[in-house]
Image 1 (cartoon, rainbow, N blue to C red):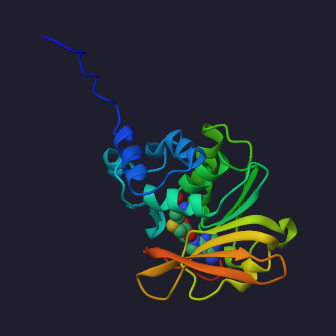
Image 2 (image 1 turned 135 degrees about the horizontal axis):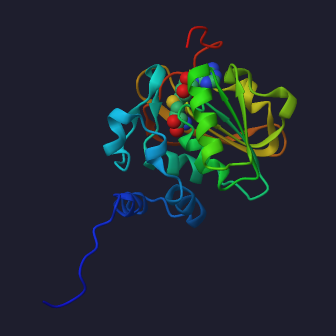
Length: 219
Ligand code: SAH
């Protein structure tokens, strides 16, 4: 026998991290934030074994936990600074929120399903996150009392430019959102030009659940 005995990893996290790097997620802060976020805490029992796959998975209320690559891409595209106050629309499982919390000063997050919000809040408490502020409500309206934000991330697809949310962004802020009506949308990055206008870039095709109006009454 020669060489060192191979120790099998207890999760496939190292493989996932390599896959993200191979696909162009290179920001060290973003990679570190994903690496320290235990995705298996956010996936439902039925899909626990697939927590470290680079794929979106179903969660309660007919919603999804985002694919890690897309979480990395969107977080990287937001070019967050340590002092940034970030607004996230669509808490879902809270996975993307947790990644954001590791790279920003404060994260405000809004979800329209009370069930998902409660579950996500329990996860934030369990992880001891102290910089996440949650709200049950319609994220399409933004969070006027806390505006303006340095960064905004929308994790549900808006049909067109999210004007209301853009109005809650600082003049040099950045907003990233999937935009489009069908099952496939384009991920757009809006960068404020400091004079009330935006430079808009299309990053890639994505598949998100739609941004719906109002709150869900029953779940
Ligand atoms: N970032 C999440 C992905 C959630 S999927 C994660 O990592 O798990 C998108 C979420 O947006 C769903 O939970 C959906 O209920 C929510 N959503 C859709 N429209 C919304 C709205 N108008 N306001 C708040 N949340 C909304």
